[in-house]
Image 1 (cartoon, rainbow, N blue to C red):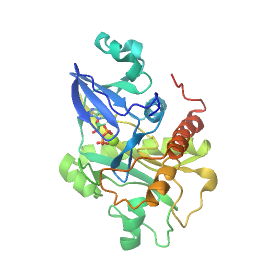
Image 2: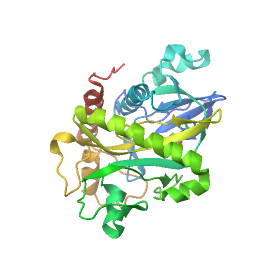
Image 3: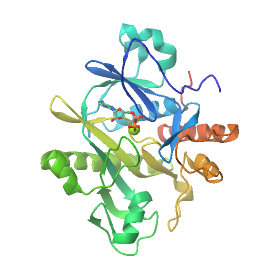
Length: 299
Ligand SMILES: Nc1ncnc2c1ncn2[C@@H]1O[C@H](COP(=O)(O)OP(=O)(O)O)[C@@H](O)[C@H]1O
Ligand SMILES: [Mg+2]
């Protein structure tokens, strides 16, 4: 495997807070060290192959958006500049560089704040059956991938194993109360609106996305990664054609390849061929460049 792929970290003197599908998170007491590896998951299964630069793109893109939307929502990012990390982390500089961030440690709210501007995925499935998404009634006659008349908040549960389950706003209210539910729905819609508008000017449709929020000092703040190809559906705007599924900007090569195999989508996932890995890496880098207007710093 190429030198610049990091599949996992194992910082023995730090306390592991959580190893997610893509990120290794370490507990620094009042702060978290979030490391984006180059792991890729498809159909909720982490594959044994890594994608060069993926972790760096996710980190740099999240940092870009945190800054752009800071006027709308407070967020957890303290810094991604290693020289400002605590002394005890400096020895891990090589692994951490470009792919990590120091963040405020929050109490995460147990809900995935999904926002949709277009009709796709599980939203399209529910619409075909019920003409609604997460209990929100929509006009008749919409086609797959159509732009929605307005942006909708369509939350889901946060499942440790398996797929998240779509729920309606009432369900979230019962768990978190009306005040917090209104707050996270409102913030999610406002952030998405601003970001989708920005991305479209740069040739990318953000069809939908997922935010996570946490409580810090009794305040709701934005956590996790934001508006990356992993947490969102990115579509190339120039090929947008409703009435069918749209190609995914980043994972399409992987999905198409996996569909050619006789794999039941249960772990363990198959290894990816070198050309699929390379083309996918290029797509992540391209998404970063389109949105920020800059090449990713590779070192
Ligand atoms: N500031 C924060 N405070 C607490 N938890 C956080 C914070 N930022 C991210 N997290 C959590 O860290 C994990 C990130 O790892 P990830 O690979 O995305 O996991 P997953 O497989 O659950 O998506 C998520 O569970 C997320 O909720
Ligand atoms: Mg995640």
